[in-house]
Image (tube, rainbow over all chains, first blue to last red; front, side):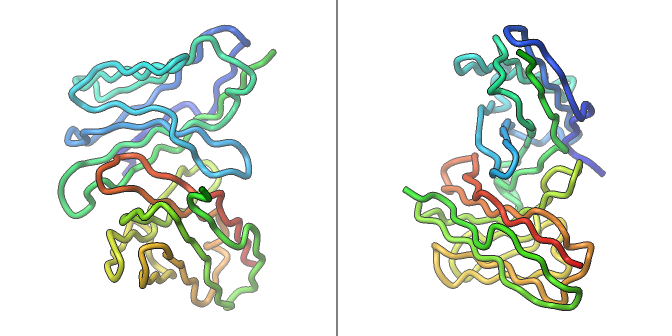
Length: 115
Length: 112
């Protein structure tokens, strides 16, 4: 049973346009959400995160939005660049309990930004 | 600053063989993790450790063992390799006060 879902395996966007990657979760107790970016043959690298007490966090071209009532978050990349082409993983975690801080990952969305 | 280092990068094993995937970090992080990534399946937690001498199972621990004798090292042991263990393995670490992980570059393992 997936607790973190990325329902779009792939997304293709034109350079300069907006990329929107979506993520849904089922556990309302998650209190922290992260996005990781992964290039082929490399490990995932941290991109941006958001605490459950916020609904938006921005870092340059990257913005993450959190809708707790819908258990949904999204990553916006504006403007998209060819170097953004990668697999993007959504992850969530709890700050309590035996699995404190352990990240639960979605399956990833492969973003292709075309010149 | 090397971060998280994994060795080897690639390995082919025959069914029934054993091997140890090495992971070391130089950031003095207490928490360390092993994940596996299967195609189209995201990353699944195998084992984790919150400090030297303390380890615990994750979501998919069967067929694996770990040890944590030092803060720096967190090796993953495969006993009796099976084709189902063909995957890319990632080690990660984090500081207890942080919520994000630092990942290694991965070990691609094929069991034939």
